[in-house]
Image (cartoon, rainbow, N blue to C red; front, side, top):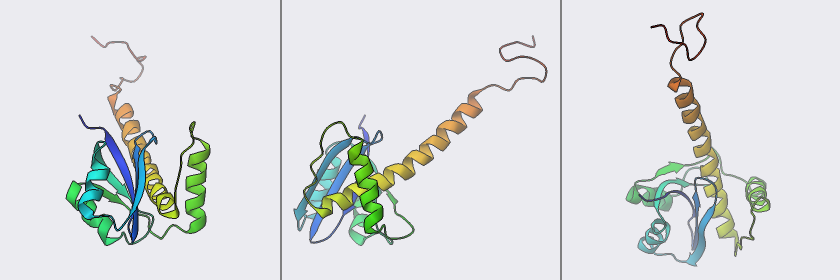
Length: 153
C-alpha cells in the first residue's frame, strides 16, 4: 500500500512543493522555475499517495486546485492568507524540532513547507477526533451497577 502523504504547493514563476508524512517527517522538498504541470504531479506522487494538499493562501490558487483534482487529493486552505509572521512561526517551530538539519533553498520552498504544515495540523486535528470517537465507541456499554469486565450472564 502506498504511504499516505500531505503536500504543500507554492505555485508561481518559481513553483515549490513540500511533502510530509502523517508524522510530520519531511519526505521531499524542491522548487523549479516554470514547473511543468505534469512534472510537478510526478514529483509529488513518486513517494506515495498524496491525499491532501495544503495551501497558505485564500482562495486556493488555480494550479493547486487543478493538481488536487488530477491526483484525487483534498484541498486544505486557510480562511485567510497566512501572513509572513504566521508562516515564519509555523516553519521555525517545525525546524527547531527536527533532529537533522533541513535545507530550505528559497522562500518558495519555505511557503510550500508552511502550506504542508498547515494542512498537517488540520488533518491531525481531524484524525484525533476520529480516534477519540473510535476509542469512545469501542468500549461496550456496561449495565449500571456492574463493574467493567463483569458479565450479566
